[in-house]
Length: 518
Ligand code: FAD
Ligand code: DLZ
Image: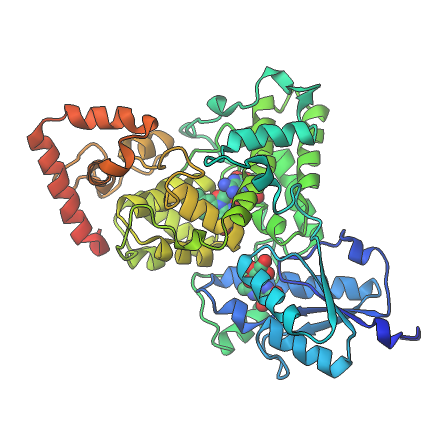
């Protein structure tokens, strides 16, 4: 480098693995007084048992981003997990670098995770040089915006937040009214996949990550799940992410909302976008995803029904921003909530897929194979079972945080502990997301050919979801009976004769005692 450096301005900027935002103002010009550091550290690989595809995706995307900014002329230090000088934690590495290169200032972007936020704030308190924090320039909302919106309220309705966001950002609006006269087209969006329906094959990348995979294995970084490292399927850079977005818009969006809640044997992603990893590591922004989707609607509204657009915009502008707001409103503390005081252990088959329940078998198998399951599988299959079976939310969180490619705590814990396990007692869900076999059968073809019988509540082959569902309601009556949205279920239970009720409870207890062999 020929340009001279002003040592007094010598700044170190940290980029975390989920801060790969090339459109950040930091990268708008090069500066020889600024050095970026990205680091692969054991403190991040070891806090949970990650899926191998998640490890590969994070490291490969970080390496590719470092190369990209270096080619643009930025100074970059990259620490690989097997570098000898790597101290294996953010703070130890930063202290070492400041010491070695005599940096005069340290900067970092707002981390998305409370744990990492605390580590870096604590580090900065101890540093002898100045430091400051900047926005990651990714989300629509600031960390505190939801808190300000719901000030003084004890319920945080997503629908209220979503309407506020639509109005504030003038998205799908006609003046101050929602476009097409309604805020929410969810009612049109709940179809089962028709028999013989052929789903378009997902766009898969074919990155060769064999060397990285070998290094991870050699370093004994514990992991779960499988991978074909020579044809790695996930987007790892901005070009891939934009291509995946294009594919989603052209091939999946027209059917997205319609089959959003559908599940089907051997179909692992249906019409879902699979953009969550690219979004969460900030290779693409929620703004550009929403703009692209709306642009596609205006370009070909004869092919794309408005319900699909509204349904998708709600996921990104609504749910995603809402969950982040809840996270920063609730942390720390949310990670300890356990409304039902559930204490059971997660069955071993969540880790190896060995269950006779076909729905769980499918959802877990594809999670192990692809580090991915779509929303309704996470909520109404794996999450539903864990809640009905009284699994300790700590164990449920560990599973979700490890297994999915998109799992970063702000999105994972709010969806898992909050939405799926109701461990916050209904802060964000108006009632527990639970169902018996009938819902699973209505939305999927999983029940046909299953070892268990979806129509039976009792007996050897009775579907476990049936007795566990009624047992959950009976056991938690004190906690749930005052909830208006639960009253219909309790009235159905109360209409059953006592012998039937007792037989169902006995069946549920038998299943709970033998959960590991279901
Ligand atoms: P699509 O169905 O195509 O949806 C488009 C986008 O909308 C997603 O990419 C995502 O960015 C956003 N989105 C949709 N629903 C949600 C939601 N409820 N919360 C946040 N964003 C949403 N999402 C994560 O990003 N990380 C997680 O760790 C995570 N854990 C979950 C755990 C459970 C128990 C449940 C029920 C849901 C979880 N979700 C999580 C939300 C959702 O299931 C995933 O975002 C989605 O399945 C990712 O697949 P996709 O990109 O194909 O999504
Ligand atoms: C998930 C993950 C993994 C596995 N490894 C790293 C890493 O080595 N270095 C890094 O900077 N980030 C990693 N991440 C993401 C972080 O754990 C964390 O989720 C976010 O940076 C917090 O916002």
